[in-house]
Length: 189
Image (cartoon, rainbow, N blue to C red):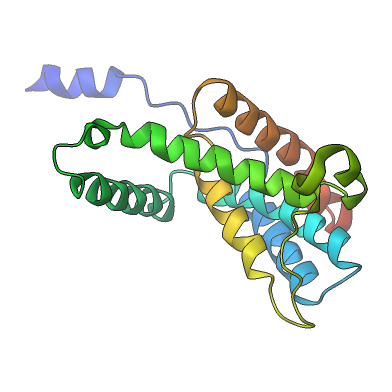
C-alpha cells in the first residue's frame, strides 16, 4: 500500500500545455474581435479579415481541450457515424470518421482562405477569390464568419497529412500575429 503511494508520488506529472496567450489576453482579444465585427469598424473586407484573424487563434487558445471542444468533436463524430450507419452494408460505411472530420476541417480552411483573399486576385484565381463572408448589417455579428472561425479554432488540430500540416501552420502564424496584440493595446495582459 505504501509502495503504491510512493509510485504515484514519483510518477511524472503530465506536461502542461503551452499557450501563447494568457487567459486575460484570450478574453481581451475575443472581446476585441467581437466588437470589431459587431460595431462594423472599417470596410467589410478589412473588418471580416481582422475579426477572423483574431477569432480563430483566440478560440484555439481559450477552448483547446475544453468541454466545448470535446462536445463539438463528439457531436460531429456521432452525426457522421449515424450517416454512415444509414448506408447499411455499402462500402462507404467503413469510412474513417476521424479522416472525414479532418477533411471537413480542411475544406473549411480552404473556404476561409477564399474569403480572406482580395477580390483583385479573381483574375488569376477565378471565383475562388470572390468568396466572401456575407456582409452583415450595422451593429450585428457576421454569423458566417463566426460559424467558420469557431470550428476552425476548435478543430484545426484534427486533419492529418499535408492539409493537417498547412492548417496547423496557419493557426501558428495567426496566433503569432495576434498574441502580442492585447499587451500592445492595453498594457501587459
